[in-house]
Image 1 (spheres, one colour):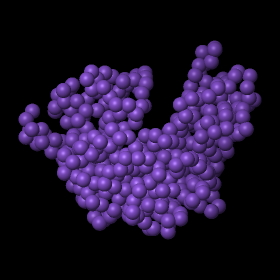
Image 2 (cartoon, one colour):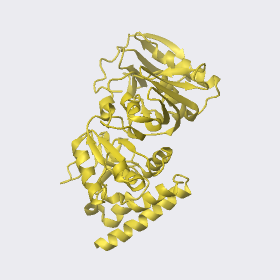
Image 3 (spheres, helix red, strand yellow):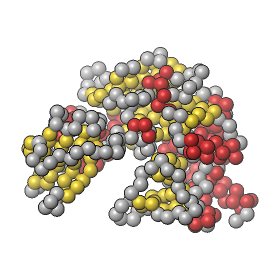
Image 4 (tube, rainbow, N blue to C red):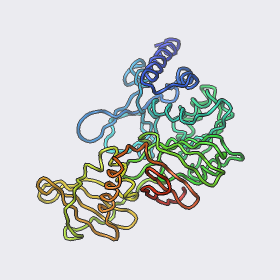
Length: 399
């Protein structure tokens, strides 16, 4: 395919992508529609991995023009799909790319529908100044440069290699935003305050630096996420630099900020005689369903979960708290479930209490939950910020 044919094909595929996003109601603002139509996503994803739907262990396969052909590569680039460009914080060996299994994605070009949803949530005019945390490939940075002008955009990336590739791609497209390499949880080292702040990685709590570097009355659009991989996209209004409040907009699946990932070591697993056994009305499915999983994450902000067979072959679900070594182990008991708990906190008891509050309120979706951020505490609440049920987010370093 000649360069002219490539450009023409890419432009046609961008048009198809825009039409798809518009038909699904995922892009409504004409300015953002124009940005998706004009910005060449393929410049930011010359090669990447995508997840397959094969059964068993999650598998990612490599995609590049050399491997699948230029047209097939372009069609994948302009699909509404996340394109993985890094695993486990390590560079990919493209000299002999192979399928990858059992790895965790750590950098990507996020699916365009989610990117545009977040950009539209900024509710910003053409004169807005914006700070982005998580430059990644630079594609979303380019969309903002198209909308606001490169001089209005600051983007922060923690990985120097990822940042260098993003800078090169942006320059190829004629965009020169201010790019910062460093820990975004500590802010963007701005000399002014941005009108809007957007984060394309998950955080366990909103970093105070983001409020400090956002104008009073400005907006923060970010993803709150826990180690159970739940919570979602929030939009907060900054009030005089000392407080921010808002609500959840939708679910989201951004990668966790590297500085806030769960500890690699699960610690010592409880023995068969540890803890006390009792019946429970809830099995592990409540952790996996979107809405009840959201509530379970609120109840256990420091918990992780995994399944492991017992000596008799029966599958058990382990829930371990990384902060205080409490645990809960769920086992099938006939048609019901039992839980064996130990440690200073009744982990599954917290889940049961939170689910009871949630059901009493009518089992609302996450978009009915609000968020309050103050200097020394962050709270998620339901129904009423003052008197309704509420849960504390963890206080974490760097946030």
